[in-house]
Image (cartoon, rainbow, N blue to C red; front, side, top):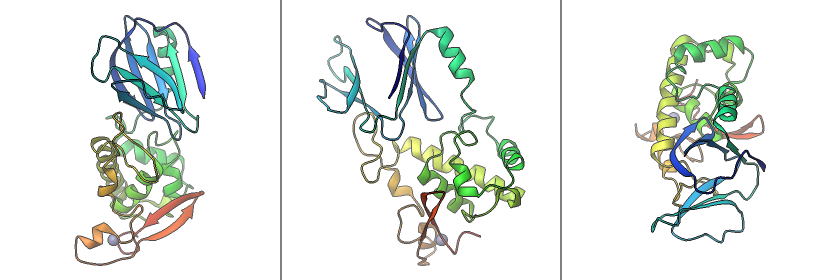
Length: 242
Ligand SMILES: [Zn+2]
């Protein structure tokens, strides 16, 4: 785990927590920031009392708070990053973060430009390139291809304008769904800050599904095909995706 601490945070207050791509940004008072990347398996959990968690690495305690006064960073695989930064050092790090996929600047034209400058990439593994699509995870990439009606093996330079429009619409559905439903959980994956499992898995159309849920809505039973692309499990519907 990567750790940098510019100052001692005792007596500091967390004013606000926001997300940028795969980073969490904690705004502190009277000054300073925490920048936290969850890596493969990290999570922050709120609790009433200290968790005694063997994979707990960082613990913040608000002694004045009777409920949820403890915030713990848990990371069994230790790929996370944690930076406690002065305002000045935070500005430097923030400037180097890529445009977030939920930012208004990440529009159809931006996606078209990204494809245009990377015309020979296989679509689904390319959606996982964090420099191009910061914040897209493995299940999201399969789901974006499925909802766009595009095969995961298509080459970026051959994707048409109307398909890029569909990719943008699908990204919005999949990403907003992921946030509203507290992240998606399977095989012990993501949980929200209270330790509750995510509900996102209920809304998946192909990922980890036996049958395509978009086809089932039309009373058609189509078996989802699982392949491996770029070393990652990939799911698609042979009927919905061209
Ligand atoms: Zn289908």
